Amino acid sequence: MYYLRLARGYRALDLARWLLTATAAAVVAAFLLRALGRALNGTEGNLERLLWCLPPLAAVAWFAAVAARAVPAQHPERITGLTAAGAGPTRIRLLVAGEVALACGLGSAVTLLLFLILRNDIAGPSLAPAVGMGVPLPAAAPVVLLAVLPLVAGVSAAGAIRLPDSLPGRPAEPARTRHTLLRVLLPAPVLLAGLGLELYGLRPDATDAERTLDLPAGLPATSPALLTGWTLTAFALALWTGPLLALAGRLLALRRPAPLRLLAGRTLTAQARRLGTPLAVLTAVVALALVAWRSWARTGAALPGLTLVEGALVLACAVAALAARLHELRADRGPTLDALDRLGTPPGLLTGTVALRALAAGTVLLLTGGLTVLLCPLP
Image (cartoon, rainbow, N blue to C red; front, side, top):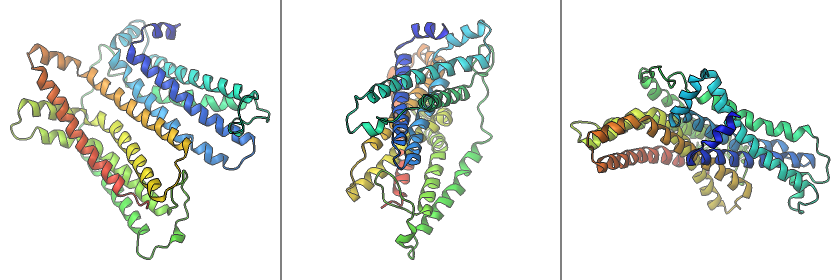
């Protein structure tokens, strides 16, 4: 009953978030059921196909976590009403997580229905192996397999919500600045270790016999040292995204800044910690796509259709997560924007502030993303 009443109060953004969650869950469920159908036919590579389902599953869980965290900021009246009705932080977390799990469950149910319809002698020769046509289907197998998706998304959503500082009558926690230096220095050893492994893999006496790690999707084989080194390098650059955003904000507000630079710099510095993670994830996804596209273009390999679908799904979830975080930050800055509006701040000043912040953040992302692509050891 609660979710029915909740759906009646959906706005356009809520409906878009719900539909995107259900659609992404349906696509991931299709990947899982395809792996199940191939396994029923006894084909090889079952473990590899199942592992290929992990990136889109992680992308859906990531989007569910970011979108659920934005709910208290987007709907404070909903949180206030639940609190007045006696719901505590744990129950509110469970309700939001249940909404996400319900959307994933409905999307998975639609895919399961289509899967069963195709198995009823409807699928053509190209789809017959993917749905396991002609092979008995254990009743528990698809149910257990598809239950993983709502469970993972619901747990991610419940763990991401920060409610104690968002409930009415409780003061917000002060900004944490004591770990700033640690966040800046921690990626340095990771980056050095990654560069060291890459240099070791690219040493002059290295032979092609060391490239024993076969990559999927038509990518060239590489050595474990090169792949591990590039992974560590990309991870270190992603960890530096938030601190670099804060540094860019401080540079904008240096000396005697004009109101435009002052507002842009202070806002970017305050939002860097919460904005850095979704921007780092989106940058890493785009960098990985560029690396794969560069490799495919040089080797002339055919682009796998399923890989393109998975890449599009992961990219869509990363973009949607960033949009949810931006909407959350804008909702948090609502009182500040109202105060500036009452003071007579020109609209052009606020627009220029947004443009300047976007320019500074884009420069940081070009730096980290460009280095991630350039340091990739794939030919």
